[in-house]
Length: 264
Length: 366
Image (cartoon, rainbow over all chains, first blue to last red):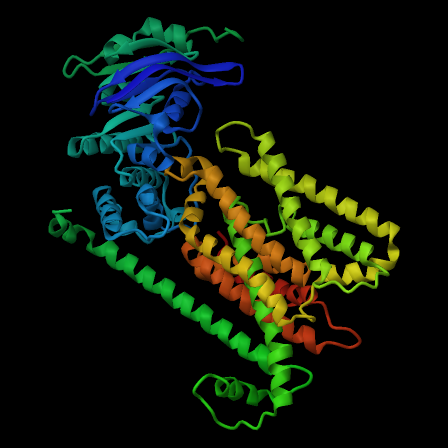
């Protein structure tokens, strides 16, 4: 369980996230949506310990600020929007980096560390790639490898910052299906920033919409993703359809909305 | 884990591969050690005076405890081997190994392939220190208990790097580790320019020490004695131990400061530890050998091109290969000694640059 109490992120004078409070239950998948610069990444980065934040983030009763870097890495795994991929690193070594929080100064990765890596590679269908160099992989394969490294951390919380932004529609779906499948196999709390609203609504349990650092809506996709709100927040013209069969929320862009004015 | 047997099936393909890789590491280390041993033997065997070169190997074995046979090497000849050549070989090994290891570590910790161990001011600081010592010591007749030049060079190198670190840290005030590495490199550029300018200013007002300073800057192992070896040994040994312990952290640095942080690496602290270790070692060897270029920048790259970029392999190999390279580079430097010895820095660049270009042309570049 993650509890946010008045979490605030500032860069100098600029406020990226205004005091944010929420409670994410263990095993939930929460999607964070909002236009560029809304504060999605900042919120995720505050959980990952990459930016200073006000207020407190408490995971299972323990404040994150009180954890050492290694303890935090064993609690929260983070997949950045644009991961740095060393081209000449073998896949297995890259995934083994996920075991960093568990390997002591004076020791090498243990048998268990190697087992976890082998197991993770297997689950993500990457075993055949183990000895390939990262530079030889396609975009979709890379995304899986980055996810594998995060999973190897065996952290109960997984943060995904725009995990699908560099992928085509097929690979977007594959990546999110994979996360959904992993959640069915192990207890995993997922917080992901997502651009594609239809995908966000389809895969997550609930959505939090940020705009200029503030929560403007939160709840089930059907309540958050209304045409009127999207028009206000994103300055777009969309229609929102609810599928009769499964209740999926489908956001369809339409032509004919005036361009947003500068400094709106 | 209690379900070990259940997992056994799954992990087989990868585990065998990773075992192969580890065996591969050991193979590379043995290869590096053999190359170093060969370099030591060559370095001990060749020189302008002394016994025939083929007698040196057997004589070294003869001098081991519990082994005794006659090689025909006289005591005078042995003195040349043991008191003249061996300190030079051992010191060359320590200097070359340290510079190469420090270069590999700096390159890793700053994620920058163009970085060498002199980046944060160790070299320019040492140069300034030596210049000051040589200028002030000019015309003095007092005999110092130890040579003040290396001492001044060492102290100035440490102080300079500390200044760089303080300046760099004061700019990147945020807790976020991002960009701290870049700021530090830029601070290094500023501090190096400043110390070099100061050195030039002092030199220009004391032109009579110009030759001496220039000779020191070019680097030499010519006056190596066992005392020099003992002087640098603790620093080099300490640096080697610390950097070896951090080779896995250096692999985490390869995905950048931010991701390393999320993997549980205390980036700022780890970088500081690595920089301190690499700098202390570099300052110590620079103090006794002068500024030998090329080794710290290029030897790690050669190893990456040949043996792969993993720091698990790179860090130990850098020391072994760097040591072997400098010992071998010192041989022609000794032989081309008319009228004066060829500075070893010139030899390292002469041999190393074409070889490096050859590697760049033939190997896939990452």
